[in-house]
Image 1: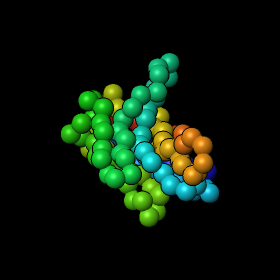
Image 2 (image 1 turned 120 degrees about the horizontal axis):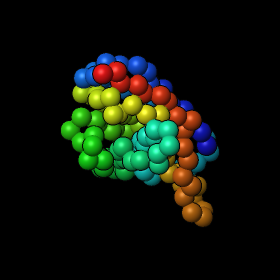
Image 3 (image 1 turned 60 degrees about the vertical axis):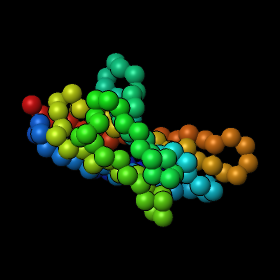
Amino acid sequence: EQLVESGGGLVQSGGSLRLSCTASGSFLSITTMGWYRQTPGEQRELVATISNSGEPNYAASVKGRFTVSRDNVRNSVYLQMNSLKPEDTAVYFCYATFYYGLGNPIDSWGQGTQVTVLS
């Protein structure tokens, strides 16, 4: 399986960006999808996840500013980021849990996309 992200970039404080991630491969289904982020020297942290039924979960730091959504037909997850702040600057990683029908589900990560918010 593979997760390919797009949509990162440079934006002024208060601006918006939309991240996209599409999964491909020979899986039966995808359970949780979402986004994490990481800055140099820090642990990767949760940004937002969404279940296959569409129930979202947000980190407190982004609640009310970011919206996670998914398209189960396209095996895609999106992150709409509004009111961006310099502290949102990080590499953002797409995440998905793949189910193959037998055995345990497998977690996978995208390659990461840089988001830089200028003050």
